[in-house]
Image (cartoon, rainbow, N blue to C red; front, side):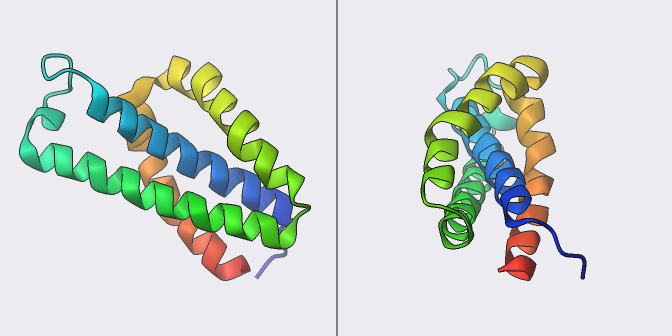
Length: 119
């Protein structure tokens, strides 16, 4: 298994997880008439909520990995400044909430596997 710097693992897994969680939250907060077609159904809403919860749990594991492997201030600043800014300024503006969720959701599963392998 190749050795990857813990900073890279933390940054990628944390950013993907936070982006998926924020996108799911934004889609849930939309009024019913503005939601995408599949999000208006009960199964669609449950899928979005479950995806957001999975991303939030993965973010917790990424933060724990960051605090374990890095200096304490790096994960703390990334959680409250870097990750949200990158999501709002770049990901949300370029992709929108729906596309961001659809792209980052499979990446959350990859992030979970990476955290498991490199922990």
